[in-house]
Image 1 (tube, rainbow, N blue to C red):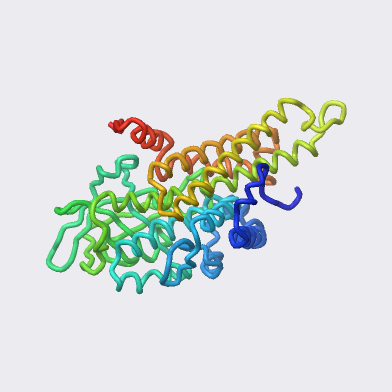
Image 2 (cartoon, rainbow, N blue to C red):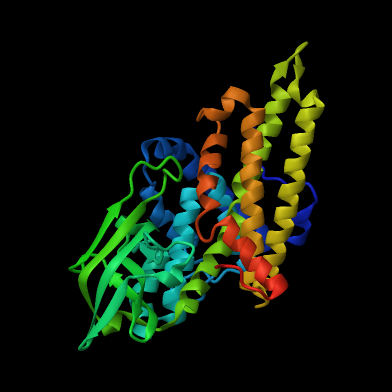
Amino acid sequence: MAAYRGFDYLLIDSQLSGEEKLVRQTTRQWVEERLIPVIKDCYNQGRFPSELIPEMGQMGFLGANLEGYGAAGMTNVEYGLIMQELERGDSGLRSFASVQGALVMFPILTFGSEEQKKKYLPKLASGEFIGCFGLTEPGFGSNPGGMTTTAARDGDAWVLNGEKTWITNGTAAHVAVVWARTAEGIRGFLVAKGTPGFRASDIHGKLSMRASVTSSLSFSDCRIPDSMRLPGAAGLKAALSCLSQARYSIGWGVLGPAMECLEVARQYSIERKQFDNRPIASHQLVQEKLAWMATEVTKGQLLALHCGRLKDQGKLDFAHISMLKRNNVAIALECARMARDLLGANGIVDDYPVMRHLCNLETVKTYEGTDHIHALVIGERLTGVAAYK
């Protein structure tokens, strides 16, 4: 296959600044040189390429759109372009970066004390420390407000009890951002690796997101000092604001595999010959699929770019992000399915990235709010009526 060049049918690059293009090209080159050579084996082995974490920190990928404490301070469009290129490599790598930046660094920066910021943020930005985000529970995924994990005051400390699951980076994390129910409502806490009563274990048997660490966390009379409470994190709204940051990165990220699946299918259809030695690209049914993919990817690019501009202006709302995440994941997943179809039997082998992307995107459709939940967020914005129950 020819070298990957991205996809720009509608000349959307004309709307990007020179700095934005440079950020994208630098990330694309890093992915091509450092991730692509190893990701097939990592996926097959069920291993996250942790050796790349320090490089991601050096490149400014971790918390790229955050300011200060070692973060790169990029715009949200530049951050989105980084996520797009990382996920073109693999959803597992983009998930790592999303969790590190949006779900760990963001809440510490937004809700943490100055002491917490100075202690954790520079090391998280460099990749020296890894973080995870504990919200989802075995019995509560789409309804995080039903959480049963508790934190009870005991003098100048808190005692945590409960369980979290489907936690990206869980066993690798040096610190966990954990949400628990208290007598004063839902609050956020930092729990350091090695704290007595805190245990993390990996989830095995995954057929998707195999190049990603996915874990369960348990807390059994886990005692932490009040200095590890995030002082500004009060109520479920604080936790959901973190999810909005992560969902934004997903809306950009999935464009990477969508564009790659389209390009792989396009090249393959030109090179693959059947019936009188003609390329299958000469058939109308094939061109119709390619046209659908190109149109939907282009619409997804425009949606992501406009949301990025709104976010940089401070105008992006969580309901806007629901549309971005829901639409772009859906079209990326369908692009992967169509590409798999166009490649025939070759679509399921790891000589091509299509099936890996397809399997990963099935998970991306579910996490950080399912397709159905985001439809209800949009529906509530349109009607003023909440239909969650």
